Amino acid sequence: MKTVVISGASAGIGRACAEYFARAGFQVIAGARRSESLKEISQKISSESGSKVLAHSLDVCDQYSIDSFASFVFKNCHAPDVVINNAGMAAGVDPIASAKAEDWQRMLDTNVMGLLRFTRAFLPSMLEKKKGHIVNISSIAGHHSYAGGGVYAGTKHAVKAIGESLRLELNGTPIRVTAISPGMVETEFSKVRFNDQEKAKAVYKGMTPLTANDIAECVLFAAQRPAHVNIDDIIIMPTDQASIYKVHREN
Image (cartoon, rainbow, N blue to C red; front, top):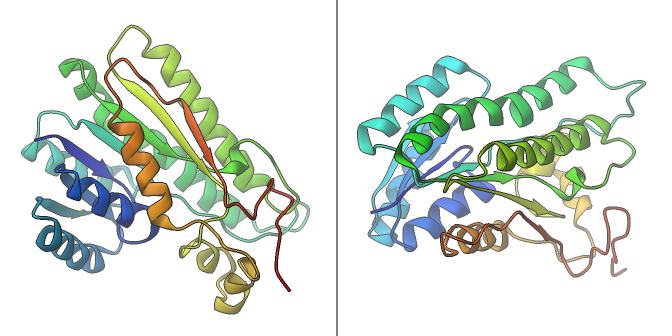
């Protein structure tokens, strides 16, 4: 049985990935900071899919937490077949001149350092076993920047660069590297960003956004390609979103 490990799996895209991979017959090892919620979700997915879903607390901003999670993973497999770097966040929409430094730090620690730490926890075992697939959940913001999103977009540009560097470093090995770059997806993302439910709802007003399931389906598709096929990047947008700047909304 193949094994997938997922960060940030207690909600949104991470949870949807856990569901899709479990239904596809993978052993899922899910990590998130909200450990109680994660445990309940994992039990529910296990029951519904018939596949084994294991849960362990994980904070990608904490090296000790990552080490603990990795030890748990290695008790259940020699090396994961798929590593999904899903944990990520945005904080605020303030311009750089007035934004809070602590918001910058949270985004950098989670989106960049967290991804690097989580990847490095499993990459040596993948190299040893000569197998594996790293999937980074990025964003359209990794391709285009926008006012009020300078640091968030900067972190996602970093994710793009890290993935490209990994492909170069791993060239000649069987290990694949994929980025998934969604446009507007309705999850808890905007609620966390604004810390305001009404502002979060307004982001998607008058348009039909992507769902977490839309993204999970793309992740599973990339992971199930033949070994000689690497999906470098999937940019997936709602039909109502033509670019990061242009969104059609019904009145």
